[in-house]
Image (cartoon, rainbow, N blue to C red; front, side, top):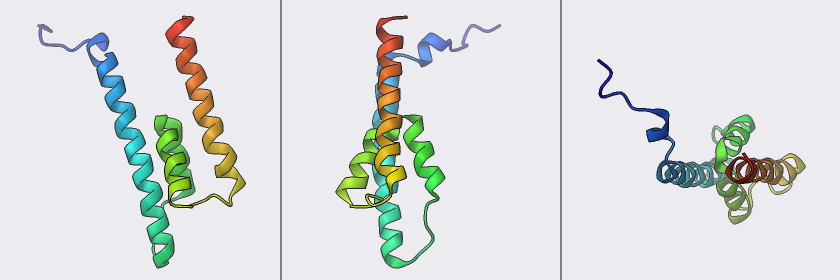
Length: 101
């Protein structure tokens, strides 16, 4: 009955994980650009909580790159310390799960 069911191992392949990280980081870069653009225009802004959530979901490299490329949120200590801190913790977790577990 479940002949066509997809298993967890089929979803979490190395290829799919790499695709996910590319997409989430491009999205992180994009939302930093978009928020900076909206800030210049005085328009509706992306909530800071959303920026941190995208970073925590694996988009840290993209949000950090966007932060410095567009010079956005670079004066806010929460972002200057928070984004790299989250990203470093994620890298440590990936290394641990990849090599020691």
